Amino acid sequence: MTQDTHLHRKGTLAITLAAIVIILSGVKYAENIISPMLIALFITAISAPAMLWLTQRKVPSGIAVTLIIFSIVTFGVIVTSVLSTSIHRFSDNLPEYQERLQLITQSMVFSLNKIGLNINIDEMVQTANLGKVMGFVGSTFNQFLGALTNIFLILMMVIFLLLELGSFNNKFRLISSNPGQTMANLSDVTGTINKYFKIKTITSIITAIPIILVLSLMGIDFPLLWGLVVFLLNFVPNIGSILAAVPVILLALVQFGFVAAAEVIILYLLVNNIVGNFLEPKLMGRNLGLSTLVVFLSLVFWGWLLGPVGMFLSVPLTMTLKIIMDNNDNTRWIAILLSNDAEIEQA
Image (cartoon, rainbow, N blue to C red; front, side, top):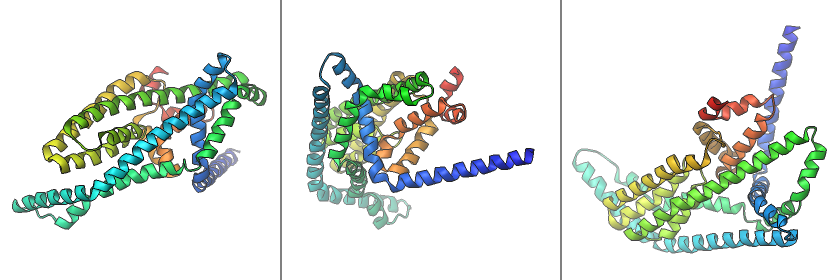
């Protein structure tokens, strides 16, 4: 009997793992469809408090949705236009920047070879390529914007989701065996996502403003572009701040030399450490409850599964899964593995 039970458990585990692999393969294959749907869902989750606030003040649903969609489109148009204009101007100057960077690289390699360090000049020139660095950052944005190409579909989904927002509670109560718990879980998920994006937006603005001001004072070209890059990449955990800093450091090196490049490095380290290690944890508190390792692994996993959209949404997606798993006895152990030390000690 014990052997049969053991074999049954092994069979169940094998079927479960096979099902997970099939589901992930399906998600990966349907990335171009799922990514816009996820964007629409998260835009709706972020917009829900504004929608509820307007409807509670007797604003008709149609007008409330129109105001929210207008705000979203206006913000998107402003960010996109500033980015596209700045990137176009930067691209025009790129050959001149690249030529200067190659001269600096060759001079540096020559000096190192004189003291006995044998370095291949061609390899170093290929490595110190500002175009490649900006190409990598640009391709990340292009892939993310690629998910927004069907913007009409995304906006239509957001409109219908917002219009249906009021009836969701009744629908979930009817289909759930435990309505109270289901509504509590849903409220927890939407509240956590809203809190995350609200705090991330605030900290991203706080990170970008001093960088724009200092880069302007230093005379670095296109400070507004680099500020927007910092603002957007701050939503990508762990590696976002590194990606945002590299092209600016190379540009400072090209324009003003090694001292300016070192100053830019210090600027980014100082701002990101103050915001990332002090301000953001203080605002976030313990409610998010994800370990640092889990945040990094979620970035890698969701980035592989859904591309740049998955990278931008890696933390809220993982938090959503954690909340769902935490409210099921069979999957609570997974939620515990995802938790940080502070949350485990509190439990």
